[in-house]
Image 1: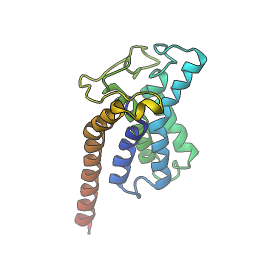
Image 2: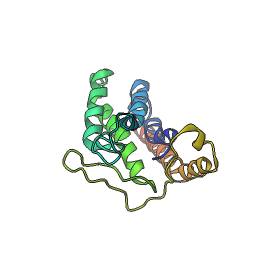
Image 3: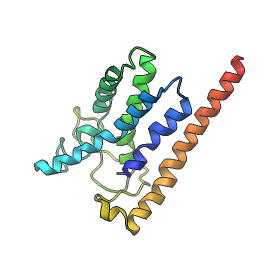
Length: 179
């Protein structure tokens, strides 16, 4: 998996690029929470649930169904359904789904259960460039942790920052054309 910091790149890049009229602060903050939420499944290890179980790490909580349900729940919970409900839901869905999609691009683990509950199969992307993050704080602050951060900078932060800047530029040009 990318680091927790890396999982924040998608909601930040997209949300800041779209601007606060489309993605209000409360929705942006919720998107950041949803981008991290799937990794709560590491608690399954404490309950003896094996990694490769549908309820293990990178299982159901990394599925597109989970992302949709979580996005809908947050849309209703934060009151985003009153103002721009579709835009809020879509942003929150993309934020939640980005976690699994980024995990699928890593070079470690067993893949992600993107299609759960329809399939328990674990998937990887054909392009697996992101180095998997070590679990545990002590291992993170090592040479391996630095290699992961470099990998994330190149394959996560730069592209998603570029996407954010492109969205910002499009938004600014659109505003200029309307005037």
